[in-house]
Length: 304
Image 1 (cartoon, rainbow, N blue to C red):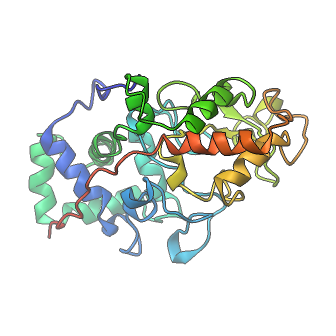
Image 2 (spheres, rainbow, N blue to C red):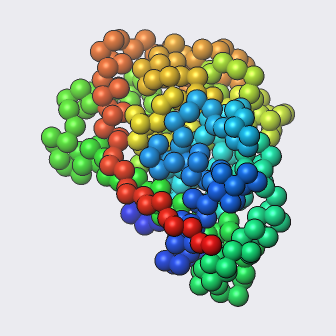
Image 3 (tube, rainbow, N blue to C red):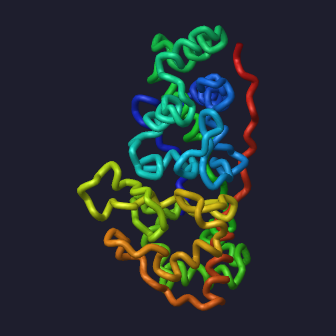
């Protein structure tokens, strides 16, 4: 069942002032060296908290090596980025800002820019009294907004689980059975967010070693990437860490053939499935039931 209570860390509890400040910072392009890239440039609420591109674009409009991962339901994520290099939303918030390929702004420059904006001084004092404008308070404010704003809404699947027998089609119900049996999707896409928050090599072609770059001596981590949530997955094409699978039909076929690249690190959970054409259609129908209405997000007036 869906979780209703948003979890917050002890040192960054919720307040309206913190959410408001984080909302502004999330949409403010002045957190980049160029003054035109904001967090929302890549994590657009209208694209289910991604950007809809095969691979992200960063500073100077350069194409980055990986696709932008969604922030949907980020309050419950166990780690962040495709390789899990950040353990908290607060840590995640600062890494793209200072990454030279992304927003390319040093954290000291970021603090200086924000301090020179009178409106932000007032807002930070309300949100984090006597803490000032620091790297830590910037990260905490952005993380607070992300936790609140990115929560997915109720999908047809949720209504069906709660007892509405007409909420999804018979094909989707067959797909759900396949999801949990023959197709074995639930081995990784588990829980109400449909993710185990772990990392697997699923046989995507390419040289990017994913989590293996962080743990070069552990074979199971080579070419392994984080299992993404399947919430709103039908709206998040293209797919995989590199955008190499154009449609959900392609994704299903990737798993059906047991991965496109057979490596020693290939997950033992990935194997040929021998799905029929009807099986694949039913799975696709089920995945569509995980889409939910998008929460209204306003683009804020930024402080001067």
